Length: 266
Image (cartoon, rainbow, N blue to C red; front, top):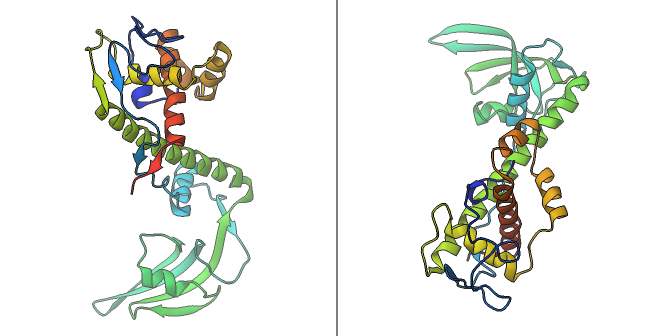
C-alpha cells in the first residue's frame, strides 16, 4: 500500500473510535478528548516547494539499464543537425602529452550532466559529418544521431511516468512530515495514550470527526484499491489487520485535507 510515515503505524483500536474513532468526551463542538487538546490546525504554514523534476537523462539511464544492451535500442534518426538531448555517435581524438588517442563510435548523450558544459554547448548545432575542435583538446567527428527505437518508446514513457509518480509521492510525504511535526508541537497531551496508540493517530482521528472527513465502508474500499498498488504491495498491506488499514486510510484522507488547506511558509 502506498501509505507511509504516519499512515502505516500499527496501532491498537482500544478507545479509538469517535463515530468510527471512539474518543471519550469527543463531540461535534469539542476538538479535544481525554488524551489530546488540539490547537489551530487550519492553514498550517509549511515549505511546500515542488516535486523533483525528472530529467531526460535520468529517464534515459534507467531505460538503458532496464533494456540492456540491445543493439536495436537506438536507431539512426536520419536527422542531420544535433540538438540538446540527442544521443550521437562520434569519433573522438584527444591530445594527451603530445600524443593523440582516438576513440571510435562513441555513443554520447549530448545533454548528459557528466559531459563538460563547453563540450555540450559546442556539439549542439553541428551536423552529421562535421569535424571540429573542442577546447583545443578534442577533435570530434559526428557520424550519426540516434533516437530510441519507436518500439521501445512506450516502455520509456512508462519509466518516466513511474519516476514522476515516485517523485510526487516523496514530495507529498515530505509535506505530511511537516504537518505532523506542526500538529504534535501544537497539541497538548492531556493523558498519555494507551500502549500501542500513537498521539498523531488520536489527533488525526479527532480532526476527521470535526471536519466530517470520515470514510464510509464504500470509500474505505475505494481508497484501499487506490493505494493498493500491484499484487506485491497488496500482499504487504495484508500484513495489517482491517482496523489498522482503516486507520491508515483515514489518516491519509485527513493529511490530504490538511495539505490542501496548508499555506506556504513565508
